[in-house]
View 1 (cartoon, rainbow, N blue to C red):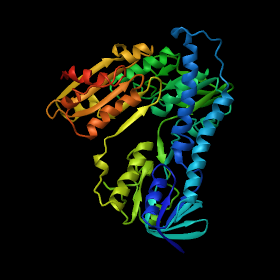
View 2 (view 1 turned 90 degrees about the vertical axis):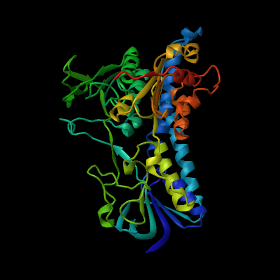
View 3 (view 1 turned 180 degrees about the vertical axis):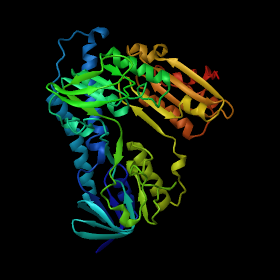
View 4 (view 1 turned 45 degrees about the horizontal axis):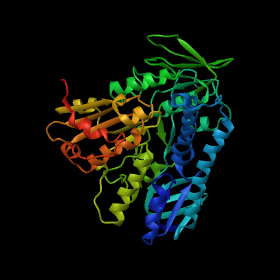
Length: 458
């Protein structure tokens, strides 16, 4: 057996920077990766998809050129070049990350599948490795839901759709949340016919009603068909591709598409780590159970990133690393429960979200102040002719703390950080209300919305 001071299993957004901190502290580190360095974000998530979103936005803006007094010819999509650009962005990031790991002092990079032999021992490629500290950062993958007929038809997930070398004629997206909606709008702008099918009565049902309704309006205005309340979804082969059967209050009982994307959630990559041999506890879905310090029930074993069930985002995984490194190496007392969660839906216009929705705040029994403003009254949006969406802020009437916010509109994914930063600083909304932001920006309307807060209607 070869022993190290620490073992890192997986190279998502938490593992490599943690390996770097441990190495800088003088520890010997083994980093184990069975497939591609960089995890979901680099290879099949943020980087390639947002690169393709940028291409889709360019096509959409080119089609609107006349709105800005710009004369162009017909807009065509070279899908091979779109994919090649996305592939290059992901490949360059992956190669850069792997090269850095291989050159990291006191770090041994091992390609292989790690399985636990005990609480402080893993086996990789028939070699046993031991360490007093083991950090699991293995990420997750798309769920294949138990739909009727799912085993009878070819179906796509976020990874296989990115590898598709052709543009679907009609893409049926099962799942009306973050992954599904980003792909739906992207492929519609590339020229595919797109239908979104969602079991719930609204798209992104975790959001407040007006946000969900606005997103549906944006999609339908672009020619994307939206079918909600699809209570009984089934798949069947069809000569044109696949038939998706529904039970909806309105519309045809089935849809025929050339391709179907299943975007209904994710599951952790923990089922083949032999965690039981180490005694590491998971929940019924396979997520590794961790405490407020991200430690598992087994001393010396931590779980970071998507596999612990506390955030399926790149930034939450990176924050997991920050918490563990601060506590282990810097003598701090950082806690998972202190994290204020923010996230984005990268459609166009994007949604930036942080903290609680109005529905969640009401359920907590708080007295609320609510502020909203349509993007039609945001000068920056008017100047860009991108006035879809709205801003919404939720404030505790008693403590004057900002509880949450949503900005659905141009620049919303960036402007929301003004709210996120204020919430992290625990300042009262009355302090932010008197800020003097730059004109013309989306962020300049945040103090205006705060000055116009109204008591929530019971």
